[in-house]
Image (cartoon, rainbow, N blue to C red; front, side):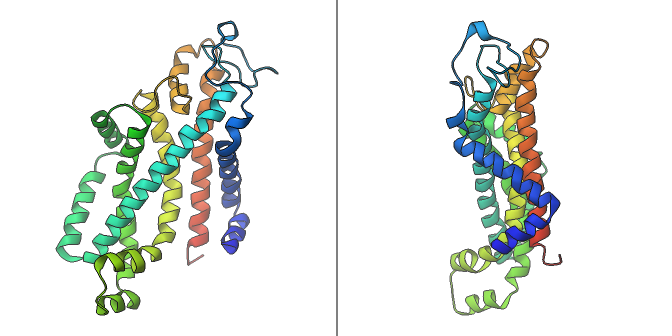
Length: 274
């Protein structure tokens, strides 16, 4: 682990990704404690205030402090995106590994089903699922997880096919071990490196998907301080206070860039050819 961290720090994009993601995680963990105001407190006399010494990032249409809402909204945006990506990765990794282990017609049937689902764009699939389940952050989490699972299954299967041919897997089969044991104990631990890289990159897409669903009114609901919802509410007041839409948009972009850089750095570090 220490060696991986050292190699990451020697990579410009890996080091920058670590710094950005580290700062983001710090905001997620301790950000709300440093919020200068209550993110839900309305002050009609303070509406549309520009950035100043009192309100560092200005106020919104209800007089709420934008900085405080961003700090509180980090948990709702980043944490849910990470959880959705982790859930989708877990489901996809299990499906892909089982498919590679079974082989033959079972593998063919599973992969053709995965290909059919992957033919639907992730955003459209997430929209369909949220419309079926209802509008909420939790339903958006499940929708994004299900939208990511087929792609993760495809990535995992491509790696698991080579693991399936290894001697330790054949030895487990010869010992009469169960399929669940072979998949869970012999194959999954040996395909985890590319899964981690893919998962890290997909967190960036999950953040943008969450923001998009909230922007469309299908994710977080008012008065939540989720960043996509903040952008959606601010678009009507761009002519009065452009900073209302600027700061949450920059926050979403920064998270996406940070996780993309981190994923690229991990890919270079974990690549056996590098």
